[in-house]
Image 1: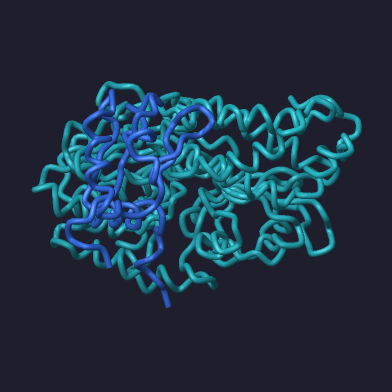
Image 2: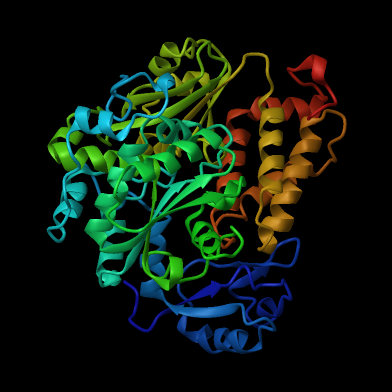
Length: 91
Length: 412
């Protein structure tokens, strides 16, 4: 069960330019693909990394690195894209 | 297995059913003025969106209605950018008033003051039919026809909203989504034309009637486009739960446990299955997804025997990379690199030693990393190909051999 204050990394993929600062500031959760664009570890940001994650938000040169409340991010993903059938089991 | 509901009435080839004939056959359009009533009926019916994502229609309607304050927009999505699909064009060309009944019901139910009919620019007959149908009737809200660009992503809902508002037909991706803030800044219901046509019938006959057909985990009927190695390609209406074998047989083809070959389900966002797997496959969103494929927009495409799945996949990936909206790095660079490497593998003798390893690795990295689902769809198709055509990929890589012997060295 996610804590109320849990946050998840959300990258604005249109704004992201592949500068790679996020991977330097938060290597525990971010790796770069072969073209320098971030691959984010799934799930909420662990409490001991939240300060580092906030720093990545601040220093992303194109302001593409964001943190969102985990509850919102999860309901969005499960409701609209990843599990479109979760709520319905026609019998 | 075939079941005619949307396509009941005069033969499809005779063109658009007039408003008079439509009303004579089905009676007047019911009203959806009692708050929440039709949405509750749709919820009980289990109606899923037919644009490809199979999202429950009622949940979308409720989300828009809750936010709209009586000032929403209904965007009727007939862009149909999927090259293998013709079902939306067929529906708009033959039964425009079913679609418009559904659009008006949606406008009443979610509280919309504006309807936008968004039709793919390459579908000239559909544009004409919808235009004419709108002028035949007194629409419940001001209605505007917008011609969609002929690109793959133009039908993605945020791309459609952006185009209607005067921008490029490219996905916006980040929140807010159209149900929160869409056309003109208003909560917008973006709904596929086939979904709305089903609404027109459910409003008349009820959710029990709707669920009376279908044998799989999903009830009702669906329009499908059958193509490839069949004698009679085209659009058919089936009950959900029909097997691929039965559908292909009706279209004058053959897919059975011993026939060899492969079938692409769901279109370019879908997945390949070997014929022996596809044969008993039930055609409905849940069953197809469970099999590692997709129902998508209802495409069933039979790869002719003797054709190479690696080459077919390379062509599709090249198209998909070319259709990127070119906004997000992983799609611009990653999808292009995947398409190029797959093309080299397909064209025997030109693969680099690490191409297959790269394609496998990259195909696991792309999902969820774009503003829209374009890269997700493309790599889902690729992963199904790596599984379905494992032997062919192996032959290409290790022996430089291809089942399409006469086409060696050529991809396009």
